[in-house]
Image (cartoon, rainbow, N blue to C red):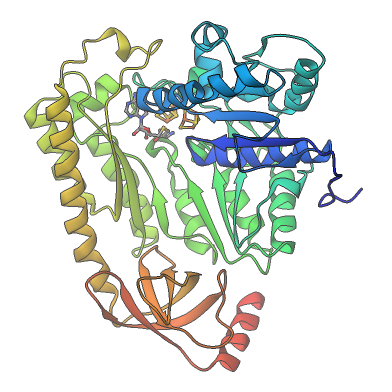
Length: 468
Ligand code: SAH
Ligand code: SF4
Ligand code: F3S
């Protein structure tokens, strides 16, 4: 049977999979969907009618978990009316809460941790066969990633996620990820390159390579022929129709000259890079056990910017970490300004049971956290508004993304370093197509682009690009 075939019959049973959390969960969701479809199950978007309802969860903040508990509560009545419906809680929350989840949610049938996803269809069959409360957690002898991914769960489109490594070997004091996702396991480089090539055959032009500390990729693999992220970028260069590679997420500790050089020579690396700083205060960084201070962060970013002057950076920040004073927070605002990030994701500190920081008093009041959150986002907006117009007058290329409703007759695209640009609709433009443009103006929100040359030339340009 080919990978895109599914056994859909009149009596096909259906599964509903709801994904929360990070992009790794989105990727794993595609693998899980494929494993069910391979067994003849049909995906359903309706949890009120599906035969199996799975919550693919996140534990990074308390709010994310509470949301899932709320939704599980809504299913209680359905389970009472139809005992045959199978309910599963899978992923990070399963690993964190474990068997105790059955106490709070007695109508749940399956609790399945992140390293046991391939067993999920079997677990569902076991429940249908009469077994109760199946729980699989922690390590598993079988890898989550098969050497050749079944692409049946890939929803299509020009963007695709590919996990290059799983887990995290660091121990930031606030973070639940290492305990729920386990230690780092990198995938072999050949497996990743082949997966990207197959996705490109399905029309993908932009891949997002995923890992919690993606710049540490390969360090856990045997010494001889050990790959790293620089090598992976070089190898992906040979996939002609692949246009853009995004990396999610780097940790400053692993950034080095070799990686900066590889990014700079890659024609596909998207120069919009998440390198989360978390805080600008050395004291807070030390208490978070991030493994760097603001000076080291500056040095690593310097390496990257020297190699790629047009690089744009994205950061995550935690505000209200225990002990964060007004002065510490001012240092964070200053760091945001100094490094001129293009985007920031700001999170209010949420104590996670089992982490080191959980033992420290969560002493920054909620109101103060919310206020700091707002101030960060305000400053971030101002900075982005200053950076984008600086591209006016430049020659660039944009990847077309969508036709936004708010701008009729226009396509929205992104420059190679992540700024948004609008271009007039014309024949042959399509999502996932990269086109050469002149950036001619800024409309207060995004850049205004004009096609460089006519479409015939665009085709030539793209052919030439394949041969550099
Ligand atoms: N591996 C990445 C981040 C993974 S978690 C890194 O090290 O940068 C995604 C983001 O959630 C983190 O960057 C952090 O900003 C936020 N986060 C993690 N734990 C948190 C907590 N306990 N409270 C609030 N935000 C948290
Ligand atoms: Fe969590 Fe730190 Fe690992 Fe990121 S690097 S996943 S914040 S422990
Ligand atoms: Fe959340 Fe797990 Fe991702 S805790 S951020 S879903 S690795």
